[in-house]
Length: 348
Image (cartoon, rainbow, N blue to C red; front, side, top):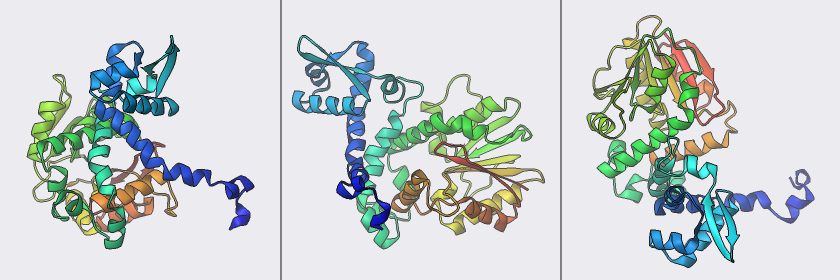
């Protein structure tokens, strides 16, 4: 194996050290978001000293200066020195994606990663050994009660819904336009959460009606916290596992199939197949593995997250085609978007 390594790699394992320190890099961004660093710098609209930032955010000056300097080193913040004092300001990337006030903010995603996913991943070794999620060990919840783990409090529900909302800020348009869906007049997004992806669908296909179908407390929270007055998306309460699904020409399952074991996925997809008229279909939205499962790394990491947090896995294209074929769908198309999530369209 050594013959495949360059001399520099043999002398010093740069890539390994980069991976080893990855969790520290994540925690720098997580901590800055939780403390409100990016919001303060955006609001100030002028460079601030570490002393000023520490005073405003009730932290130690020394700790804040180290955090700010790390963010500068990561090219997330900028710094200039005036009269011997370092003054920090936000980069365009920080203003756009890390401050809460931006329309493209990923703040909610980061908070969920920090406060929910990060603690779960502390138990990755046990998840690999046991082959089951770590909700009980991490949060004291039964490993089989996934919904209780995700929605264990109103605060946790809002964090999870914020995560889902942020995901479609980045990927929603690419998913909505991965295929031409204009032939589907009635679209139902099952488990559509805040309606963020559904809104992208409504924008892309204004002649179609788009409905979010989700659990009653999710719909109530979405309408209270995430809806706009001119919302083009409808909301309907229900449980697509235990109850009936609304009639539709196209059912959207975004980040749903990867949560569950195959038998539960087959049960749900069979229900949708039976509900579809000829020409109707389903759109699955997932992070697809390569066919040989050797990448992308993002999808491989997501699959490990399904082990740690849920009961499912990520799949290659043939994996999704297989489960769709088993319930009767045979016209299956796959589109890799080049972003975090891909699209699989199957028509009856």
